[in-house]
Image 1 (cartoon, rainbow, N blue to C red):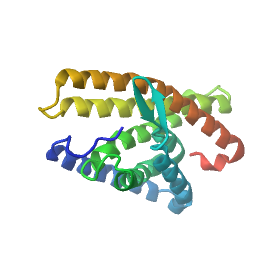
Image 2: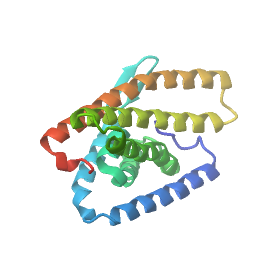
Image 3: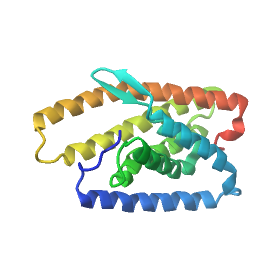
Length: 214
């Protein structure tokens, strides 16, 4: 779910960097308002490494092959730390693996990072909508929804950008077939990441509940 260099026009790449800078500033501002902003840095570093490695774990889902993203997991566990963590992870993916690119780093950060922040808000809804439900079940349900929705929103943003900015030299019919194939292949990934997020949230609740956002 990375957009490579050379596909998007320059003005869109610049806009991506601008919006990413604003969201990063807002996230850091929210982090600095916490009683102890440094307390979650080790946790953020660990999940940034997991996010970095996840791009190398490919899952064959015909007609394509997809890889884990984990932005929903980062959002639910890290909260506002998620966006800076994802930005750092994407930077190293670009320079070490060639996933995405430096010119599209801002756009790719929006594609992956915005749904992570949305996943955090969804997970926090358990305090409102999960009243009357057993805590373990509530965390699992909202963890699944957060993980699955993050992939769904990322896919929607990604495909919207691609469809509306395909270079004129591309075969439009072939492009549509490829995009539809990728859309289909990402539907099972929503379920996979939803289940994975729910399982990890449930595990952390049992063994290290202090790692979860309050």
